[in-house]
Structure formats: C-alpha cells, structure tokens
Image (tube, rainbow, N blue to C red; front, side, top):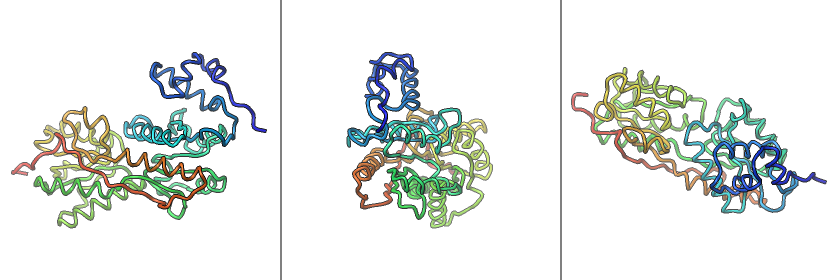
Length: 340
C-alpha cells in the first residue's frame, strides 16, 4: 500500500510558511514572495506534492518539467507556457532546473520526481539535445513506462515524442532578411556543435549562404550559449569582416552587441544583429533586438497534448513535431553601409 503523502499543513510547517502560502504556490496564485515560492517548491521536491499517495495514478496527474537552467529567460518562459498548457488538460506541472540544487544533474532530478509520484516528464533542452551524451538512461525510462516528451531535441532511434522549432528554418529566414538589406558578410555565432539545435541551425545557415554564393567558413563561430560566448564570437566575426551576425539566442545577441560597442561599432549602423527566442531581452534591450521568435504557444500546446495522449495510454499520431519560427524585426538591423 502506498504511503500517504504529506499534508499541506505539514509541508507548511516543514518549510516554515503558512498553509495559505503553500496553497497559493501550488495553485499558482499571486500573493507570495519569490523567496516563499522557492521554499515551497524546494519542499515539494523533498517531500512530494501534498494530499496524494506516492504512486497514485488517480486524480490530477503530476508531471515534472525540467529545464537546464533558469538564468536564460528563454527556459523559464518555455516552462511556464508548458505548465499552463498542461493545466488545460488537467495535468499538474512542477517546474525545476537540473542545476538548481548545487549542481544536481538531470538523472538525479528525474529520480527525485519519480520517487514522489511523477507520472511523466517534459525535458527541455536536456541530455537528449546533446549528441555525444549517453542516452541509455532514456531507454530505462521507457522500460519503466514513464511518459516522456522531449522539447528542443530528440534521441535518434528512440520512440519518445519530441516537440520544437525548426532551427534550420530560423537561420534561413534571418539570412534572407539580411541579404535583402544588402548584407553579404553574414556571420553565425551560436552554441557548441554537440547540441542538436546547433547542428540544425548550422545546416540551415550553410545551405542558405551557399545558395547565395556567400559560403565562408571564417564567418562561423562556435561558442557557448551565454553573453560571454556571444561576446567572444562577435570579436572573431567582426575581425573577419562581418557586417551582420546571426546568433543562437537572445542572450548571445546581447554579448554580440556589447562586443561591437566596445570595438567602437554602432548597432545597427555598423553591424546588424539578429537574436533567437524573442524573450524579454529582445524587447527591453538597447537597441531592441531583431530576433527569430520561437512559437512558444504552439510548442507548449503540442507538448501538453502529446503528454495527455501518453498518460491516457495512447500513441500520438506524429512522433516528432516541428514548428517554423517567425522573424520579428526591431531596431538592431539596418541596411548595410555602402562602404562595407
């Protein structure tokens, strides 16, 4: 017989907050501080969700949503949309970062969630997106009949559904736009090539640049998906004569703009910059960022629908779903200077 789960009152006592605060956090209601919210969610990770039996399959299913980090705004934004979409299907989602607890890795975090009764997992840009990682762990999850949906990435040969954006399409539309502005020296600054989204974006970049007769390996820079990574890549690409730079994330784009300004260049007068994601950094940065927008709502809806199908014991009709992004034009791009 499954042991009873902790009550709301007991969880409140364990984490040192009021039962009302616990209820507000669990029901995603306003009226609690971020520190209280963090304490309650940490408590849920340790003690489980209140009011259910561990392993209980009745009532509202509990699904873990794991992102690799919370520093990049794109990940919490995606997770929040997925959580809301799951709720529309009567599924409770618990968001966490695989590096939130002092470096705990994805597998350890998954085991914690499963011990506390998670019936499914939504994994966003996790190990499944890493081409060189050992993916046998996911096969074990299949054998344990855990419902899993990958977001941004997949594992070849593994029948686990995935949802995401067509990164190759994002590169194509950005290059076409910049080409129409007169740019010919278009650089690509993006993350490490062992990530599947990076591989897809690079493929779209090379195909499109080749179609225009502009292919040049010196205009491609591999870096990490951070501001520092964008900064390092930009200095290299600007040194190679790039008049425009496409990035793998809005975070990288901020680093590119900072590097350009340090080198005495103006954005967009001297250098055009295109981000990827269309998160808060794109809207509130200076200049406001032209960026490739991921269709987050469509991705979240497809992810939630797929998870609902899996929890009901049904196979989704489409194993891998990809949605085309759109280009959002703002202030960081302009016609190429005539003397460039």
